[in-house]
Length: 278
Image 1 (cartoon, rainbow, N blue to C red):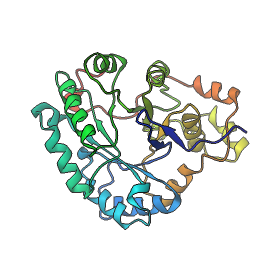
Image 2: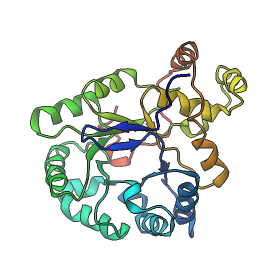
Image 3: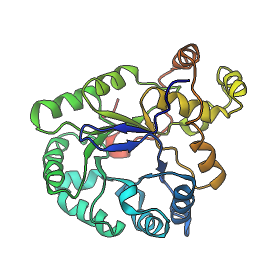
């Protein structure tokens, strides 16, 4: 079995865990706080939130309630579309830090490439990065065209492009574009909201390794060098999603899973982006 990697090296030189906890829609009473404590106990070291998730305060409480030192955690948050449109990037970032009760984040992302705004947003984020309050900056939901415009008009290459990515939508051209330019790819919705869990191609592979189809899908992703942030607040699923580093899929199995691609989008697009996102 080949060496099992648990982190990916960003273009900043920092190590980002290949597995993290997504907390989208985790807004119930004590829900996100307990999920983070459980995840940290299990071994998770990356927490991914966003201002629009409305749970940054809870994320901060969960971080402080865990037994893990802040320096050993990798915390991501994101700037939302309305802040881009009004040009309040610095204010939005400071409000996120205040809600999280943190002095810095490890990664700050543009959540969506708002037309006519995201270049100005990026230039503001470059200043935040230079200030040291964001150890890395990146983007989410960016296409190759969006990334090419950034490359032509800015000085800092995004550390990460966070995109929907899973066996039913493997984004192979975009992933290769990013990886050949030093941009790490991180997958949100890596389980496609459950859409491939009964897939007949994945089931025999899962049986071979005594794993779930979810674990096979996550393993496939990290074996392609794509980090994953599956969302769950259930401790059993948080644990199960983490058990992907002690086995490897064969090249033949990887190819079989590659061939499942059907460009299936499982996650929604914000209403204010419907006309501009393909």
